[in-house]
Image 1 (cartoon, rainbow, N blue to C red):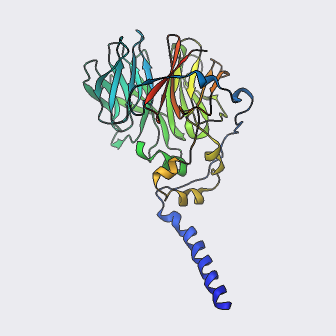
Image 2: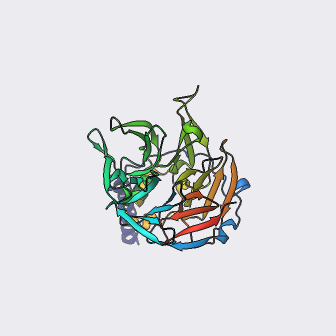
Image 3: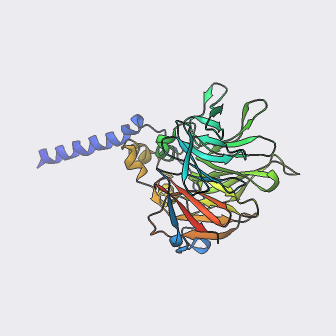
Amino acid sequence: MSAVFKGFAALITLALVGVWLLPQWAPVQAVSWSPPPNPGLTGVYSPNQALAELTLMPVGPAPEHVACDNSGALYTGLDGGAVLRRASSGEWIRLGTTEGRPLGLRPDDQGGLWIADSIKGLLHMSAEGAVRLLADKIGDEPLRFVDDLDVEQSGHIWFSDASQRFDYRQVALDFFEGSRTGRLLRYDPVTQRVDVMMDGLFFANGVTLGPGDAYVLVNETGMGRVHRLWLKGARAGEQDIFVDALPGTPDNIRFDGVDTFWIAMPSLRASIDALASLPRLRAVLSLLPLPLLDAAAQPASFVIGVNLEGEVIHNLQDQSNPFNYITGATACGDTLYLGSLRTQAVGMLSLP
């Protein structure tokens, strides 16, 4: 018995040493963080089946977001780099390709697009499909994960750099690390200069300008909140929290041009929050294959609309809907168009 006990004790000791040493070889440098309060699906976020009425429009792999121009024409970007425009006939026509991964899109009202490409950087695509690189670095530092953008009337382009540590193929690693290296950036088309306007964000994501370009909003996905940077008026240069304590992970955000900001939340926060104070465990888990780490997310069918005061006025859900992991919501005409990284179609819903 003593030999068996000694062998068991040695095995336990070896396991403990392994758990202690494994984080040194992990791909992440995990740190602790304190998540904001998480209300869960209660109160204004109570479950419902508002998204059960979704209809689907086939388009291709992973249409992350849908953009709408002043004429009502729709655009989307697909996994593999293709950028599509929807013709008046309803057919999706290939506009061109970034040869990267187009995420955020903004029409230029001349048939072309401003594009946040997570791999290639900040781009412009003409109506003929010609691609021009605007920015893929700050100084000598490459931009690793350009995510979303919006364009001021002045021509300045506001865009997010989700992570300085990991790229589009390694999203899960940024959440397992928790080092909060996301940034809100501004591109000046005259000087071609990129400036850091906000940093320290836990996965900087959706970007949208408010009414009259008075402020810009940026989603902080890992913390379930939306930041605001004032651009005009007495508060110009000030920062505050526009929406806080969301139960989901805010991805893209879009202003409808009137009084509502639409926020898509592809997953719920619970699984992220549970590991916030356990960096060593997250470091060990990060050694697992990326598909297993991605599977740790809790997919949701979840979109909210907030008013100009950041108050929730629309709560659209259907947690049993196979059209989930919704990453973008854009109001166009009388329809809300939804994008997702896990579908082959765009979702359509009559505006509430």
